[in-house]
Image 1 (cartoon, rainbow, N blue to C red):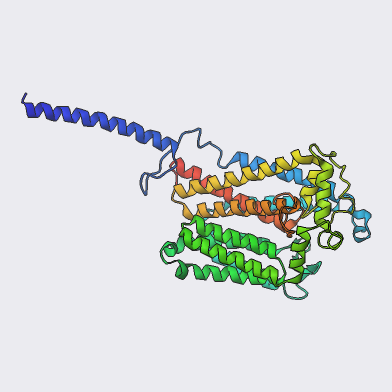
Image 2: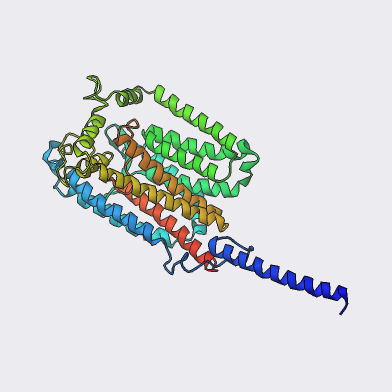
Length: 428
């Protein structure tokens, strides 16, 4: 055998060993990461990573747990309301039964939403956004929109009062994700690509401020900007836009006398001027937390819900939780919402890694929605933020909010189901 032949056979053997090693590394990487090896071939992950179940079971059980807890707390917070003249015609179980009906309707809507593939949601994006705009206009029309406490935010549907702003949150979320997928040049030509979506959000904002519902407008702006950032917008441009948005909200507050009063009441709720006015809710919420201390006064033992704390079963449900379950109960609520937000964001990142950009942005948008709204509600209840009319997701009394929250969670579960199918080598 010649020297060149020997060197050739030795080189082939060495190349074969390197191929075996690289193949081992590739198999290990494939088992660990849900990535595509080509446009047609998908990597199949370990059985421990992708279970036979078609959805994220822990996420479902945590959401169900919050809903069950919400039934208990809404009943506890509203049981004394019929003792006041305003609610004297209601039974003591009135709000509990309506809340249970809302959860049941939300569960049915969620099951239906789960059946729709993400490509169908993508096709529906402009139509869903248009429907939300039409409803936001209709709610301002006399004899169609229903006003409560000076705000016109609801449309009566007989069995429930529907709040179009809740649908607008989901509609803007899906529209923004679809827009980012269609206009990926946003990374290079920022202003030219972003202004149509900014105009759409501005129109929604003007309609919401006319109700008025500044809290919902804030959530929608955060969702839209979050999707822009997650979609890869240049960081400097994003922060420039964030500064402009903060300045716009500051101008809205400064030009509105009653919004300024809310800010002053938040800064000093115990003053003689505010204690019985704009600071009344906040001061009694803080009293509730003070009474609860570490372990709470026990389920049903709240005093503040006895006609002292307004909206105890809606915006200030956490204050009742703090009084009856103490600091431990509040920490459990915070931990659960942090876990849900993190879990949903992980599902979104996984979808993007699987080249399902629209689905990933939608899931992450839902995570931003639930996480930010929970953060605002908890901050308001604890006195860390000015009072805003935002409910605690999945817990506070409110049919429209519960309905749309459950539909949003169902969409995330659909994203997760499609992720699992892709990682098992299937197609969506």
